[in-house]
Image 1 (cartoon, one colour):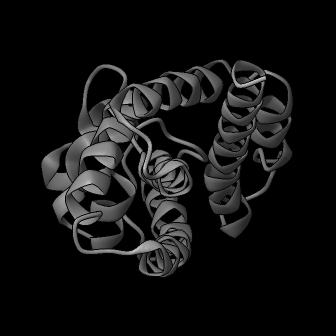
Image 2: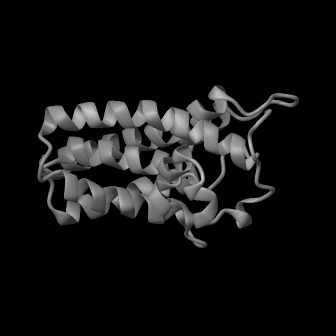
Length: 181
């Protein structure tokens, strides 16, 4: 990786590290991934708050475009930041949680606070514990021996969270269906 500065460990990730490259701003969730404890949860909370703030100006179609752009930019940002850190899927990268939770909220809207909170709790459980299909998705793009960190790992960073989002939406739909029958 000629010309790419690396950081030896996640412990050294700092605001200064984040501010030195635009990909890091995005991948680290504009600083939410710098949390020393539970950066994925903090990133998801940032995603929730930013969704609520942006939802005032964005309709469903606009959200679809924003999410598509966020996924494309996120692929670049997550891949580049993982390369800079020298870690295939660092916990400090939280853009995957942000976009996945945006998708959940976009599809649940106009859900109230309690439904959003239930979605948050379910998503965080699935993303952290990685049961079933989420674990499969997480393993699918793992770094192979002798392989350099590249686009494949960038896809992997995003993919398991997208599967966790899909499972969250499925579980909520099943719950609502059973509740209303």
